[in-house]
Image (cartoon, rainbow over all chains, first blue to last red; front, side):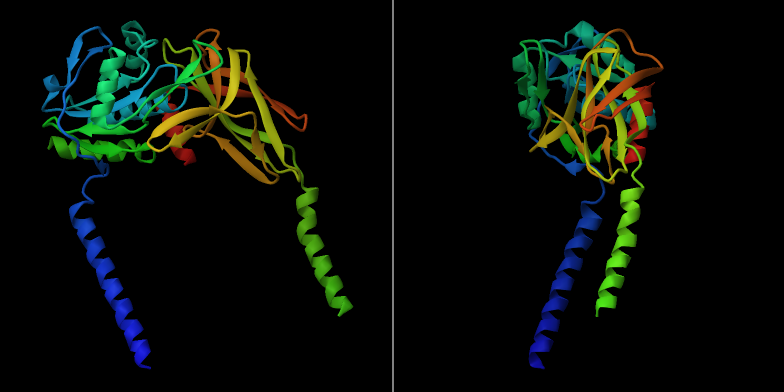
Length: 196
Length: 152
C-alpha cells in the first residue's frame, strides 16, 4: 500500500516537471517558427547576378534569407527557390531579400545566374565568387559543401546544406529552417514579425 | 474441432482471395515535370506509382525524348547536408504505391534538348516487363511547390 503512494507521488512530480518545462518553452522560445541559430557576426562580399558587388553589411535593416545551391541541381534547389519566391510575395515589401549563393562557382557564372535566378523572383539575388570566398561564407554559416564526382569530369553534383538561414535586420544570424521546415507561410510570419 | 478449423481456413481464404484476384495493373498517377529555369539544362520528373498487383515490381527506367539522358535519383540527408544519389531501380511492393516527389525519389532529366513546354511524354520500364507511357504536364516552380505541398 505504502509503495503505491510512493509511485503516485513520483509520477505526480514527473508530471509537474514536464508541465514546467513545456510551459517555459511555450512562452519563451515558441515565438519564432525557425530554429534558433545564433552565430558570431560576419560580413561577406560576393558578386551578384548582375555583376555588381554585394556586401551583406550594405543590407542592414533588412531581413535576409540565405540559401546555398547550384543551377545544375534539378530537385531541391529549384523547390527551395520557388518557396523563397513565395515568402517574398507573402512579405510583400522591400524589407526582405533572399540570397541564392552558389556552391558551384566553376559552372555558375554571373551570366548563368543572371538568367536563372530572376526566373524565381525579382528580389532573389544570385551570388557567386571564388571557391575560397564561397567556402568562407559556408564556414561563417556553419555549413559544409563538397563536390561529388559523377561519370566524367564535367558530370558532378555538389553536396550542400538545403536549409534556409535568416539574418535579422541588425545583421546577426538568427534562425535556421532545415529541409522539413521550408514552409513559406510560416517563414513569412517570422520575417514580418522582425520587420514590425 | 475439425469444423472449426475448416471454418477458419475458409474465412482466411475469403479474406485473402480478393487481394489476389483483384490484381490490377501497375499504373502512374499525377506525373509532372518541373519547368527548367532558363540556363538550366537539367530538371526532374515526379509521379506516384501504384501497384495493386499481387506481385511486387521494380521501376528500372524512365526516359524522355526531351532529354539526352535520364536517371533515377534519391535525395538523401547526410547530417546537415543534402546529396543526390543515383539508384539502379525503385521498388514498388505488391499492393503499395511509391511517390516520386520533391526532396525524395525523382527522375533526373539531363541535357534537355530545348526548353520544355506544356507537356512531355515519359516512358517507364519495369522489371516485370511492363511498359507505361504517360503525358506529364510541365509546371512552373511556384505551381510545382504548391503541388508538392498537397502531396505531403
